[in-house]
Image (cartoon, rainbow, N blue to C red; front, side, top):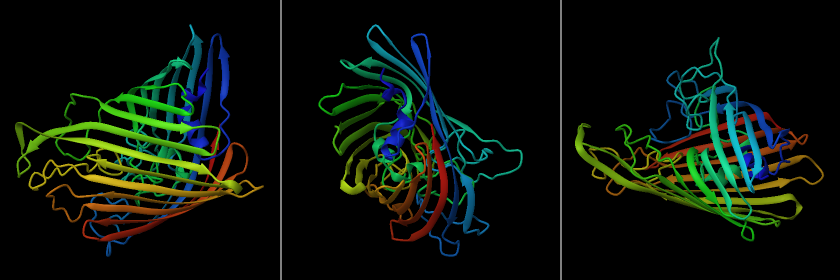
Length: 433
């Protein structure tokens, strides 16, 4: 049975980090095999941010700025880029078809008191910019995966349900900070979860309802194409608008037994929202629409003596930055660029080194995400770039236990060059099974 289709999130994340594969718990019941795998992780995270006296107005900047009480630094014990996870799957083979289902449950460890969630934790698992840790609190649960698969070696595989997206997925799965923290994105404490390099080199792929098809292995090449539940823009400000067509994602990946892995992906979705006048009043019967498109390409290569290099880059128009359809267009009705989409691009470059005859791996990555003004738009405080550098030490103490320490420096600029800076340090542990 094709367990690689069933245990996508945890197994792929660990494989991408070059850690030993997690050993799931398997139970056979009749013709079905039930599997359980997951992780628990926790980090001590210290953030130091720009002070209120020197902070600049950067709309969409991810570099943390001190809150109104003037506190520049924060401490928390929180999840890193990945929340904890428990994946429950079942698989069987019937009439020549491999059939499977998966439920992916992702609890946070920080108190969820209903504060505004951050990007990766939208929903029950979110902490957020105004979250606080108070007595009698409890953690939240994010159900990111509910999907089925069926297929075989000859026909390929169909996946239907909620799972990780295709566009940008390989960038985050190969980010060395995936099992750590990377950038944390705000001075809030606690939060679930951190940013890693989201918005600092790639757009967050997200967890989306979808139906997709993956071809059989064609001499190391696999192609996936799918339709996706269309996303609403978070920043058009006019409320939800039903979409006439689905979103489309696609991916081509090349992998053999050698040291090279390559992939490319795309996304397309049309956005539409109701037109407003210069005072912000909705105009009945008039709508604004624009296309959101994006492409990414990258790969990794294992060099001799324990080195690995990896890089992914993207170019998008009408997708925005950090998350899908966040600041993707000029939606100010008083602007001469009203309704025009914005271009964005970015890249993540990374080098890791596994010290021979030890459990230690060292790594450094640099990420940048850029956003351009729409045609005719005048918006000096809109974010122009979010950049960061992360350094990490990862100790694979046992096949299932990793200890880690990271340091990250971040900076954001708006369209006229005003800059905010911050840094984050973290130490933690990650257990997979």
